Length: 260
Image 1 (cartoon, one colour):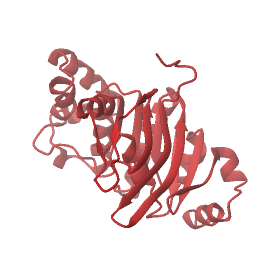
Image 2: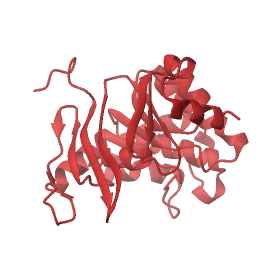
Image 3: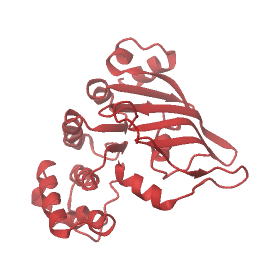
């Protein structure tokens, strides 16, 4: 068994991803240790969301390897064929350990918020329905929308839907949480309520990888920041140091533009 003290929660090695002739990721390597919060920044088209989606195989890399807590995902990357996982059961199991929160919420519109939360634990993880209901109720209380348990997603604000999506991810009891621009679809006045929930998760010591444009959040909450440019890591390091003393001219330009 891997040593939990030395084995990264997530390890990406030489990740390449192409769409036809367009190569989006050019051999990206990145590790996230247990309890780290890593913000992934970059301009539109830099490959940051694609990189995140490669972790749980929503995008299958054309080259390189992905490991979750020391377990490498078995991939078929035969040249001339579309890349694919060799073992879908392994992917489904590891997806539960690395839960994703999407920018567009992805809640099931025909289910109430409470039903959204218990769907996967009951039907995928085969857990006891009564226990899942109790856990879901507690999570909705924790993210501040317990009063919306019997509402449908369409009746919630964007911020409330995103908090429900975070609670739904937590019902899977993940060891790693992946956030793909979780506030980009929200009106500005709703961003704060979602970031508060994420700050609370970070304070608990959860392992999180976050694609975001929220510069203040990246600087204050994340332990490390990664800046992607044209499918490569241009700069990475401790967040406070990167924002205070950026080494890359491209990153300097990026943060000045985002803060303008």
